[in-house]
Amino acid sequence: MKIACCLPGREIIFKNKEDDGSQYTYYVEGCKLMRELGYDYSETNMANLLMLSDEDVDRLSAEYPDGSLGLCSVNGFLHGWNDMNGLDEDTKAEFYAHIERIVERTEKLGIPYIVFGSGYSRRMREGHFEEDDASVEDFIRHVNRCCQGKKVVCVIEPLNKKETNWGNSVDFCGKLVKRLDLPKIRLLADSYHMAQENEPMSVLEDNKDILLHCHIAAADRNIPGTSQYEKDFIDTLKKIGYDGAVSVECHQPDFLADAEKIVKFLREAIA
Image: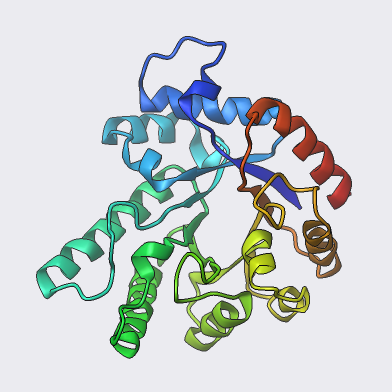
């Protein structure tokens, strides 16, 4: 099991360094900082990824081949799209082309996982649940096609009911992944969302064969190690032989100081 963390903002990455304002430097220095803090990998978000120029993507790919930059995943998949449901045919075609470009960029940078969270974008419209549910499934199939022949997998992230009205549990999303049976679609588990939905740890055991990525935070979204739930989460991952990454996604008021506590907790927990 490896540990990761979402990249912080520029104000933290360049706290003691000169910031040249480029997105290329943001990634080089950000991933370097995460390694210095004790993390194995970094997780980024789609907003930052899309700010890279094509030239910077090519440069990073050349200078850090085979994922050596250290990015394990990208979240916020549908950044810039407020609603993926109810699109007319022209807009849907534009949306699907956008997804293809994202997958290509992710592949170039050696990022193995794209996280399909995006709760607001995937929400079901009132009175259109069946139509929108089918739309989301069509989208998932399209992502699977885009990932064919690439070292990229999309992991579906269950989000609690406060954030969306579709895909609210590991149990639901796990059953969906198994029913669709698509080679490039797998499952993510997030301890915070599981705690919000009062999910038992048994759902991790039930889905151990399709679980490829995890997020971790305390039950109140604070740093992991402050509540029993995430301790049980790690113990269960160890029990089922999970060997992927556990990525920290939580409130960190003092990022650098909190990192020391988080890394200590996670290293001891996964040992």
